[in-house]
Structures are given as structure tokens and as C-alpha cells.
Amino acid sequence: MNAGKCFIDRLIDSGDLPRTTRITVDLYGSLSLTGKGHATDTAIIMGLAGNTPQDVNIDSIPAFIQEVARSSRLSVAGGAHVVDFPVADSILFHAETLARRAP
Image (cartoon, rainbow, N blue to C red; front, side, top):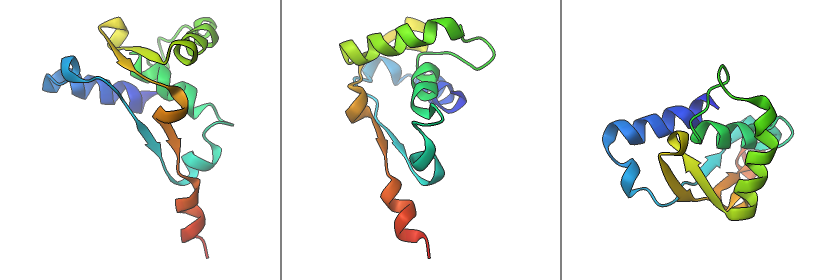
């Protein structure tokens, strides 16, 4: 969640957020192997939306994630901007990179 929020904050600080039309997240290493089981994908989406672990409304997460999946759109930076975000194409788990490097 923190990484997603940090990424959005950098887009805001650089002035690039208004020109951003889509976000793609690539996960490697252990995050790519355990990500869905540990809700890494959910945490990333919530962070991109502008949440932190300290302030996220946990009860709102399931409905928010369902709406993102349904609409393929994500309100980022606390609703300041909307990007295309088809979940299956926007969070990519690269587990094969870890498997290739393992002895």
C-alpha cells in the first residue's frame, strides 16, 4: 500500500498526474509468488487510490476493489484523477523471473 501511495505522490509532485492515463504494476520476486495470497494486489490498488495502512477504511476495501474490477477504472490520489486500470492487465505477477534464478 505504501509503495502505491508513494508512486502516486511522486506523480503529483512531478506534475505528471494529469497526463497519466494508465498505470501498470510489475511484481517480481517473492511478491510475484505470494502477492495474491497475501493481498498485495489489493494493497497496491488501495495505495494508488491514496490510502495508507494507517488511514484506510478496511470495511470499504471489498466494494472499492469490486468497483475497480467492474469498471476497469481507478480513482487515484484520493479521487483527484481517474486512470484506466483493467486489473488483470494492470497488475502483472512475474513469478517466472524468480523461478529462473533459483538453483
